Length: 341
Image 1 (cartoon, rainbow, N blue to C red):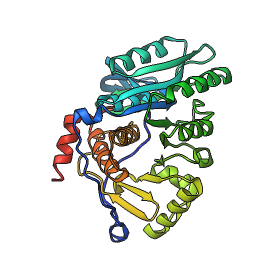
Image 2 (cartoon, helix red, strand yellow):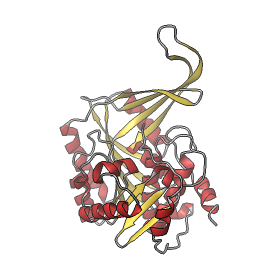
Image 3 (tube, rainbow, N blue to C red):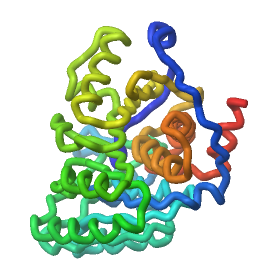
């Protein structure tokens, strides 16, 4: 799955009673406002490749369906999907990452250019570009095949040098960690960004969150948070564990996306919850990419953390209704937001 799973739903009644809603700063979201946002996205990129076809019979060789492929589709995935989501909203987006010196890397560069993303992709001849191939039959995923290798240390060092120079042109930094080796120097990247006065948003991976110390916001999903703090029995215990982690990391906010329970924003002295948007969930692939992209664009355009979270929650509700890794367009987002008025 190219994006981390972030779904939507309803918040438990106990959480509704305990949640504290901070005042939301009025924010006018229009195309001109969104164009103010200047983002630098860094992380693990991949090519999402889809093979679509019909399934009419079972193979005589093994008990598996036969898919007669009639068309294919390639889409940017991982950090590249974050970048294209931000660009779709009108933000100025630069993407820094590593790909292989292969056809998949070239294809990814072409797609990003078409999506309006300025991509600085280092080519590493020692690796293959990460490709996630999904075989789809009757609009359902039947099989996924992954091709991936970690980038070399030499290329990562070069990427850090480019990162330093690109910081000056950006207001918000998004670090999209998929655990593929592209963010080996993430602690250094956060320190450099903070020293430059930039806000840093991190989509985390793994159990070691000490690497993200000092960031502005970290956005784990429910299962990712459990890997770090353990399970919780109720909302009170979740709040205690989340706030303890936030304080330990020295971050301004911890946003936990909670599948059918919506998303909860933990800040110093406050907890606010956004109930999931009521719509049919078709595909959660890449929903987490959309969430952090929209958060970054809204913050870059002048929204508060609370307001950015509200808008990102609407964006997640839109994107899970689409097939595969997808983006949210401004008109779709405005239509969803209008439903709250």
